[in-house]
Length: 252
Image (cartoon, rainbow, N blue to C red; front, side, top):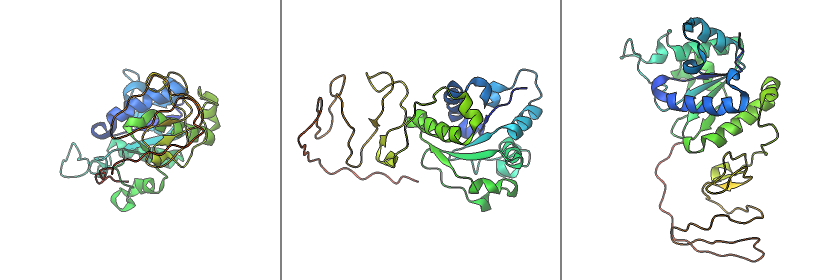
């Protein structure tokens, strides 16, 4: 019997696409036998009830993918109530199984609009989920976000470290993530630059220094001003920009 280290828990109408992306990226790193996704990991003809509950109890980590509709999604049997309030709801049952076995359960919020869970709005059997440290995935940067999560899990579980095909490729986190500067691993290159890129800028909202090196592929310039420097800059650059329009109301 295969022991899956990571169990991906999701609601079909709220996180299916993200669940499949997570499965693809995590299996590339830890191997197909180490990451469980019901659609891909249950053999034809197998008793899915037995497989789901047994795997949720035996996993090291359960990733509970939580989208904007996760909390209040209606029950299929009785649409007037929430799916979570149905004791037979599979999302709830899988989380219950993992919590009861002592597995690490990680709430994974999909995009920034998802707010931190309120234990008073969860069934008592999974209210503990609101006290578990969460992480967040943004679909535009899901590869980097999952690389960051994978690095943290590897440090916590030696069994995952032994399976890690990316060992030694990551660099330490920096506090600049919200400023749009990431110094973690970038898979597949950027634009015309292939391979491993140490530091890349998604969008900058604060001053930063990106180190030495050239800009490859030529500049693509849009907007009301920019600077393009080849090689090392030993002088000073000053550039004025027009006022940036305020961003729309964006949740945490």
